[in-house]
Amino acid sequence: MDVKALQRALLAAGYDPGPIDGGLGKRTYAALLRLAAGRQLGALGLALGEALAGEAVAAGLTTSLRLAHFLAQASHETLGFRYLSEIWGPTPAQKRYEGRADLGNTQPGDGSLFRGRGIFQLTGRANYARYGALIGIDLVANPVRAAEPAIAVQTATEYWKDGGLNALADRDDVRAITKRINGGFNGLAERTAILNRVKAVLL
Image 1 (cartoon, one colour):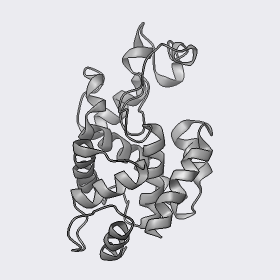
Image 2: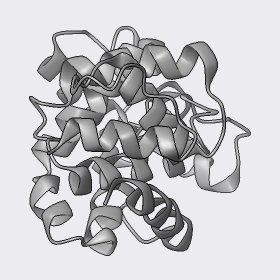
Image 3: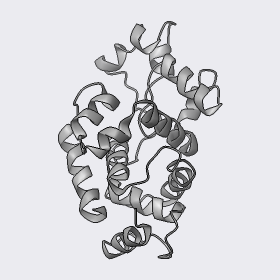
Image 4: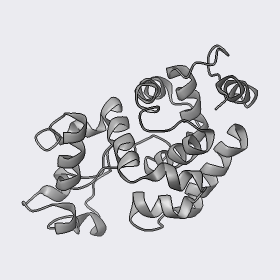
């Protein structure tokens, strides 16, 4: 990936990546996040950008196409990075989280306690246990921490690696990536629109 070219493209599109120095630091990632969100993100963008700067290479997010797919999914899941924790009604769909064996929700209250959090909306006791263990943080004992910017990025990059999603991004397969992250195709049109907006600048 030609990082200087990426930085110049971001700057030309109105997203200041910081110095055109070929370094993928927090300001460049913050600009990428703003591009995906389609809005200013302020301090949250810098916090998420700093976390991505520390995690992206290890997650294999080393091409513009992979980054575009990752950012598009994250932006959709969080409504443009507005919500790192699922808004709880509970809605009828949220009530069905309770007792869901496939999510590992085996105890009363698990549905709400292990609601969607993070930039990929990690959901369910089993996922909190698995991805918490992978990043070395007990998210079962401290589920609200999954909404902290650094942890929100860490769980997402681990999920991305775990699901082999770079291979799908290399094929530019937004449908398959959406199915892995969402479990279905909810919001596919919007995910694709965000993806196309990011690709128009990066590719």
